[in-house]
Length: 167
Image (cartoon, rainbow, N blue to C red; front, side):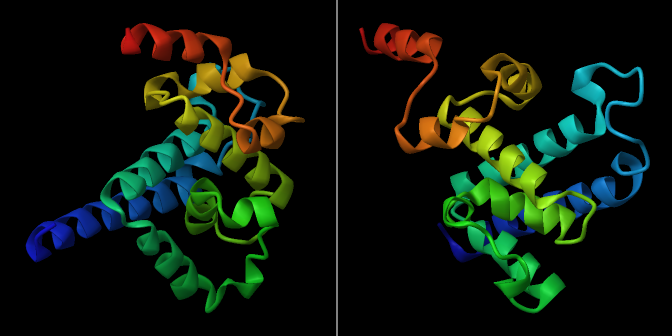
């Protein structure tokens, strides 16, 4: 990638990150999740998940995950305050959630870990952002989600889709 092209891509990712952070700190957190009559698609945590999903997928496509880690280092000095588990340390969606939400108690660590797993599993299935919330509802319990990620257990419909595309 040419230097100016890399700079534009980095700038685009940084703008998206800033937009997600602003949304999380104002509009999204101003409402209590689940206490409104909004559809699941429009609930604050769903908006957060979609925003982070789009951000991290763009970072992965453009090989710019360092932007997220630099943002975390800028906000918190070093990563020692983040303390991810072994599974989360390698999950780019965990770093995306941390870059957007920070390490405060606004988003509990267990929720951040679960959300990161859901987003990683959705990315494995190449779910478009507009279908993300529905996909998360369809996969059900996240109790064994990390096991599915580690063992690359795909949803039955995805395996069928891949076979038909290969044929």
